[in-house]
Image (cartoon, rainbow, N blue to C red):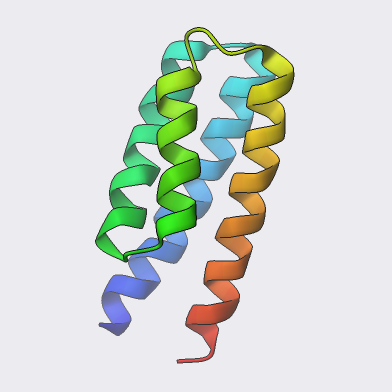
Length: 90
């Protein structure tokens, strides 16, 4: 399980960077793709809030206002940090 968690930590950090870069560039296709990948990782770990937020980003990337995407991205980052804090306990 430790290897899975280490992989999640590295891969999720890269995906969050990619999501922020896509947001800054207003690249909605890339945003959706990276959110989809993060959603799958969150589902595997049963991280419901993180999965829910990533799913919203994936689905809303093509039509949601930039401000809503930015706000959800901030929530996604907070949920990610909360998950890392939780995982650090074990």
